[in-house]
Image (cartoon, rainbow, N blue to C red; front, side, top):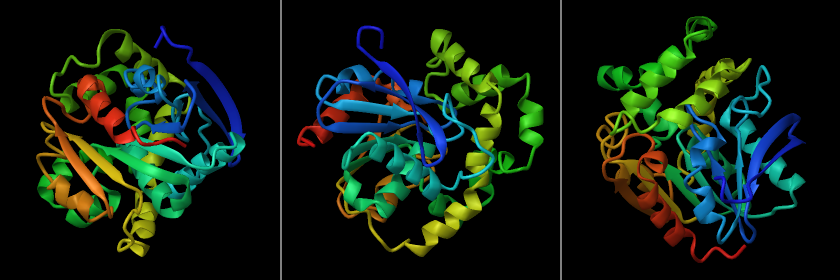
Length: 289
């Protein structure tokens, strides 16, 4: 992202100090990262999108340089974090691009604040409610981290001092090419998760699962109204190979287009950025703010 004027900011909104990066000008496009990432996950998208849009990529509550409070990790509160941040920036309506945990926040945001979303992109995400209602031995094995991360205190204890090995396993196991996240990219994530409270923050995100499922059940029959683009890595065993993703997202959104990204696992935006960027530019082309 060095060839582009990317600026870092912190703003207190919804009671926490939120960090985000910003680039470009025009209609606002917000990028919400997943696990085990930070805003840095979007380094391949920001320069492309910032040629046409005002791009804002926050660190979610508990992640990166954003504050990591003890609570507030249910997706409704995290969606409210974004709503409050947008109000501080005097932004009323956005195009929302999201991945993984960020897509859980974005899905809740689109249902709770439909007036604020013009269009929605979700990447490599099976909605929380769908995972919960589908759980069996095969899914539990693939989603072992979902279960492990919900154990109180133990993950933080075991991961402390071993962040590098933990992240290396996740990035290698979840990528079609296990070397995709390496060098400076890998070191950037290691530094992020070695920071005080970072692992606890990510675990707290998963530990909100029961509350998230309860919220999702209440409006399960409410379809997302914004045009939606659902992308996923064609080769990831826990998403595209385990769930009928077009069917899943047709059950979530009124107007949905779906694409499997070839030769990609869980991180299509990092693994196949040119394909993802092309799809994003096309999907966003009519967004004028």
